[in-house]
Image (cartoon, rainbow over all chains, first blue to last red; front, side, top):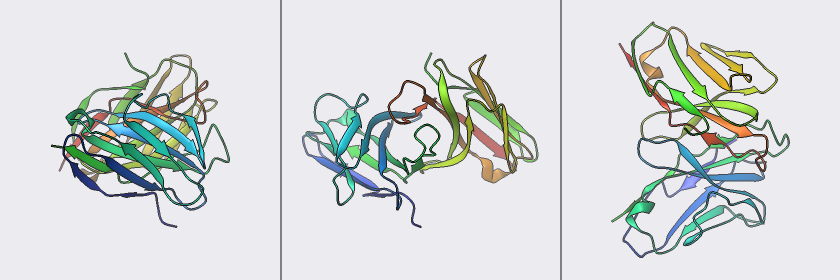
Length: 116
Length: 113
């Protein structure tokens, strides 16, 4: 059973470009979470999605950031018009969703975004 | 201070010694989890302790949870050089939708051979 997969692993963008980060959850997992980690810091929650639904986006910046988890295909975190402050590691995690309050979240290897 | 803060921020020990790190949090939780992150890599889940549990073991790891003090500790016994990593606690708050996690800033552990 493959783990959580994220691609690309490294992404370099110039200011003003768009960044699209992909996350394929573990097989059988229907819940996806996105987190951002700045250097030397812990992870910060961004958004929680189930298939075709955004459940909690309280950690997402109001502008330029969006996320989706379509019925088919991976979850996508999209950052429009990137700025240098968006440089960070973006981690996706998935959980089965069977035990809402005790599910373990399994993390992907992350996408390291560098904005030049 | 933030939900899920680790203490100390950094820890340097000799191989074979025990490493203890603490985590404090503020809100009521459903569970608390510990993760390990090697430099530049993803997070590896170590252990989950539910709010109604007080202690849990997994191999060389021992986790305690004191909900009255809103704190947890992670003990790594007989440390190895391969234990060198950052360790994060993460809490799943009772009022949170689903089980989004709130992470602390981490404890950076260096195990010297």
